[in-house]
Image (cartoon, rainbow, N blue to C red; front, side):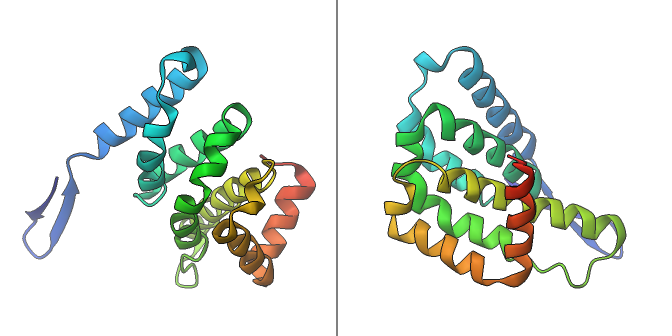
Length: 159
């Protein structure tokens, strides 16, 4: 549901479905808290994986949902861990070199959020039995900049 709007000298892409995606994730997060017994978690996992690869605002909401689900639905998280690898890796490897000031801070918080998710999943029993996810953790620990952020998050138990 994206469209291009002609603003004279340039064009802007408008995502008309963004508010709906954000609202649906908010509703799901509320349902996890208030009425989890009526949810079909297995059916939601592919949607959550897709949300992890969406625009920044949607990703951040999805990150919070995954972290919450790690304690409430660990088995479902372990089963879906492989589908989370690519979107998390894409977020963690975003280029931040050409950003400055608040743009850079926001980009780093976005990367930190993805690292928090990865660490939360890695703490779930049996999650490291998923070869794709275990390899993501191993690759991430080898990247110095990400490893230092992971250590900081781990030291602060920031998740």
